Image 1 (cartoon, rainbow, N blue to C red):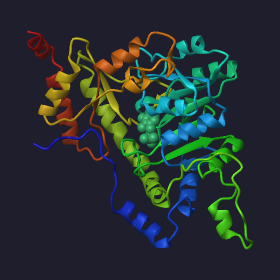
Image 2 (cartoon, rainbow, N blue to C red; image 1 turned 180 degrees about the vertical axis):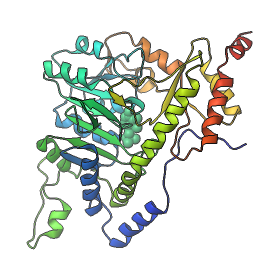
Image 3 (cartoon, protein in one colour; image 1 turned 90 degrees about the vertical axis):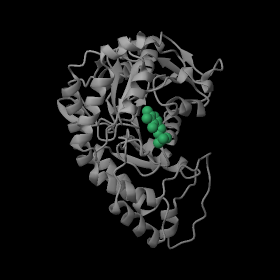
Length: 392
Ligand SMILES: *Cc1c(COP(=O)(O)O)cnc(C)c1O
């Protein structure tokens, strides 16, 4: 029996042809394809500026630098996220301050933010976990009251939407100050690796462009196009966070596919929701009325009497691959040293989510029969009858 994977990127001859075109053009990094990808991405999410970088981790690093996060500062975020969210904060010499997630979801609990704010708080990094928009209305309002910038970790949220002043808008407009996206193959569209920063602030965008290219005063495009000799200078410390033109060309093809990919993902998610809503032993993901997920992942929370590893093994035996839900950063070795982070409140919901949640297969190429197979395998694997047997 062939195994149903958790995820699968949508790539074919279109992407191959795009890369071929770039290679034969002779301009292979941060050139015309990157510029076009930035423009098309900005257009798609409705942003004034979009700046492509090497991945979402480097995007987060530059976003934090742009809002002025420095050594000794604090940045409020969640522990219940991919480790890169907090690592980027530490790259700035700052301290991640972890607050818990909501009881009925996997995003930051806005009720807990205010208590975590101190005079050293320089930013809030909210994560649209698994593609589900976090409660930006409340987060942005709290941040505004305290004049703290909001950086959205939108790594998983390309194409997700939020109802904003009566209109559906894409995540990344951005509704905070800066949004950071990932194009890793585990996300809904991919460039192999890749990232994007969006903002309405032209000064932030200027900084991103400077820092991603070693802090170099003139871009290659300007120097290449100039009729006069130009000597570049390096007025401040920069990085090599460039995206290549091969990646950007793939990204442009992926953007064309994105509406169809998301439509299909939403179809599969609503099928899961419909078929699994009667299962008493699992809690389904909650999509608030003001949010439309891109369903980067479909995460179930198992009843506490079910063992996560046993259920996952049972599903694997039935041909269905799963992953456990999101991890908690504060439990990882890289965060065991005192001073590496600060915890304000109990992280009870975060810990429970890691222990009890599993991610089901969801990718655009799934056939109806795959979806049925997953549903039936879940129904069989989470039945209380089995749980009792296991206990006994
Ligand atoms: C994937 C992911 C990242 C890191 O993205 P890369 O492009 O791999 O650097 C950061 N934050 C979250 C929430 C992610 O899921």
